[in-house]
Image (cartoon, protein in one colour):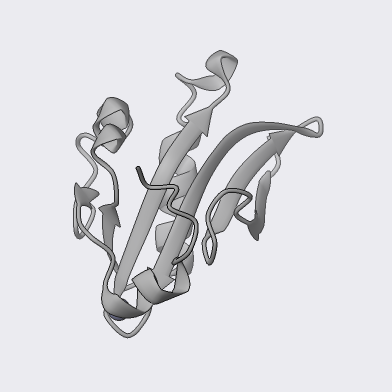
Amino acid sequence: MDTPWQDTISGGRTGWRRREANLDGEPVFGVDYLICRTCRLGWVEQPHSDPEFQRCGLASAGLAALRTENPGLFWHALGGHFRDYEPFWVGTDVPGGYQQRELCRSASARSRATGWWR
Ligand SMILES: [Zn+2]
């Protein structure tokens, strides 16, 4: 398939962006992400794959695309529920390993205000 990535503002998280893959106009994968270049940290949250595409490597490919476009960062997850998706990146050699980590000061200032993390 063509490179289907779209980069938009996250619908649910202030200050975050959303990386989506679209197929025939339908979103088949999406993940919210936030980057702090000062701290060289990136966070990803709430990956979602369309059930039909969950075994197709879209999540891995989407995260790999983000890493390629933003080299030199350590990648983390904000919430513990990210573990549900472990099969997608077990075995990948990713700095930070998508371990759970709180937002740094500037990232947290940027994403403030909605209380969505509960
Ligand atoms: Zn920072």
